[in-house]
Length: 357
Image (cartoon, rainbow, N blue to C red; front, top):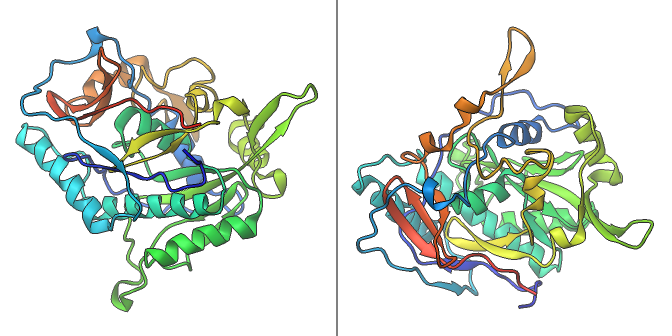
């Protein structure tokens, strides 16, 4: 399948999930985009199990469950269609006796619809784009945005041309009727907190559940000819500045094959491009190569204002099983397919994401 074509695959399924609206009244650090920092810090601990052993998988109720059909959609779905599908799955969760994991499905649907629009505009311009950071974890582990402690949607964009990247973002915003006035430059790339502009009375009201970060990546060969991929940011130094500011180390360097060719994974109600392997979430900054992302859940550290420092969370605080009843998780079945489940309620089953050459 040609990687430059639109690959948003519409998922006919019942009910995904949404998350609590997070306050955004923190001060935005100039140049270093505090929101991006908060996202990586919190997601570094928002780790849980997408590949648990059968002994870790709780019993499920599978009566009436159907394998949902995916198909390539030539036209992006409206936010209303996405919302309908999300609420359908939410209702199924509630019918099973559990609670909806997200508080506002209209805002969540707007977030997913805008996500798909961004991806379409980048693919139209032959610019590789992938979910990145906590969004990558969410796709693999929850088939959507992480339902706890997540604040944004992160993209890795393989271009350092600010003008071209900005044009793609603006085209997506225009297509979905969003205001471009909150479009901001960051040292790692761009950041956007969306507001619709169609109604003057609601111009200043946030109309998505999450904001968006676009991280500039590039690929290059090392001294011995091995192709690498790296977050470089603005002027090809922005990512290193950002990582050194918040992690006291340079941005991680990946193998090119860790990203290409992409896989297409369920994220909300469509499949979207993710990295070829899980290396981008199995190494720094999430667990420094220890592969914790699919075996632990919850923040890895907490900010203690009184001491003005981060305190590491204990293993007991990060047990995944305490999240199962109130949040959807992906489990692998014996036949290799993926099953999304909240508590004992199976929400959908689908083939595992595969690489697209």
